[in-house]
Amino acid sequence: MDWYRPNLSVINFGSSADSKLHVFSIPESATRTRVMTVRHLPPGVDAATWSARAATVDNTILDEDRLVVESQQEPVDDDREISVATDAPAVAFRRWHQEMLKAR
Image (cartoon, rainbow, N blue to C red; front, top):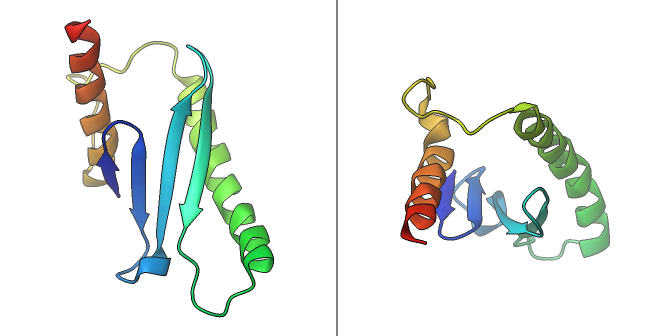
């Protein structure tokens, strides 16, 4: 997964353009974020059928992520948290976010 400022994560399921999921996290308020996913579809695919199938998978993953985020009671302490390689985009976002908050 890759993260791009300010709100894009790209999940790479392979090397082709249609194996990537672009996830935009759009803040609506201090406690609510809208998530929009965008994909490049393979040639000749029926968009409605593909979207319905992909939404099932995407929503399952997003629901799992939502449960994790909503279970956090306070800001994450990067010094105490044990992160693995796949956490790198989240850690990069947190560091950038903290820099932006300090710059205010």
